[in-house]
Length: 403
Image (cartoon, rainbow, N blue to C red; front, side, top):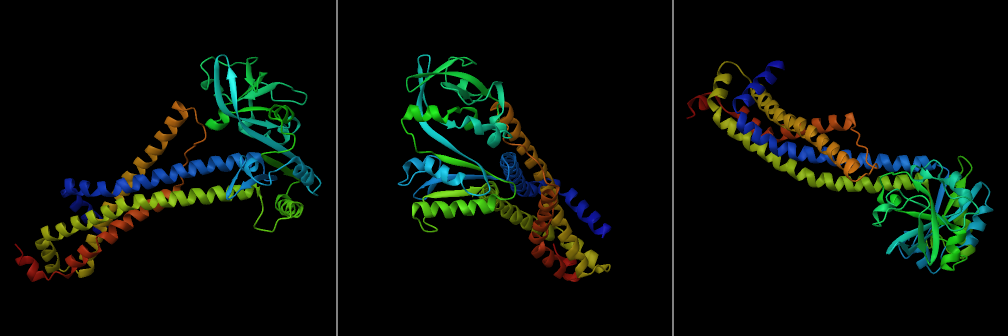
């Protein structure tokens, strides 16, 4: 077997230019596949980390407006989430905390500028218990909101990019004609939506928007190991309270584990589509290998005849050409994997250093790289089957007389 690989390698080396041109068609496709898979895995790892930091005993309840499920959908729904729902959920066995979040698009003034942004509000007493482990709620400067805060606000680290004039601790911004003092600035986490957000207490938000009852979403913390059971009980109680049938709810109840699975499924579908598109270039590369091997058979007809005349079997000729085409595919796979990993790391570097986004951490799975290399070798071998069969079927006498 070693002799077969040595002979195949020497044959490729003798036709360097043609071999490299053929390899190009393979490594472009492989590079695309490795890059997209690596980027997708990096993003999936980040999402999983965020949900794991939140904990597996968290349930998130949002409203529905038709088929749309989001914090804003509740305000558009015929049956929005309300404080009554929060009180109902608090009474369910296994629930430790039920805390509402309110989200509202508002005009925020600072100096002579006015910008339209989303304003969020929480119950200050629940922030540490519900979000204390989340990087997106870690304070970089100042402090977090606390009970009794009236016109106080916490902002994201990139909030300064919204206004020309720099905002610091103690700066005053205007919301609905009220002056709010900035008491805390969150650490940078890399998500623009979080890093440009602004938070105030629920009580103050209700006063500003004159809405004492409606909420955008509800966070629920359960006792350990009871998230699934409690989520089912919440659905049952809320359906009964709202007189709704199963499957026709005006609300959505999801555990963090369910959200992780949903995000994983979405990313898997996106990756599959992208990899499918990239595989088209592999098909083109495979056709290139086939063309190269057919040309090689024609050029080496006399050589094949000589090998057969001195005792080479059809299986020997077949194996030599299959290994040769497989080596072309494997070489393209090695180069493509290296380029793909390089592209992934370059994207990570650009995102982290130029856009201050830390949400993407590229990791390379050795099994994925091995599979890609094995697949590229397989593509090469398959592409060389027909030319190899043609070479193996040549009769010694005909091959030696070939001009």
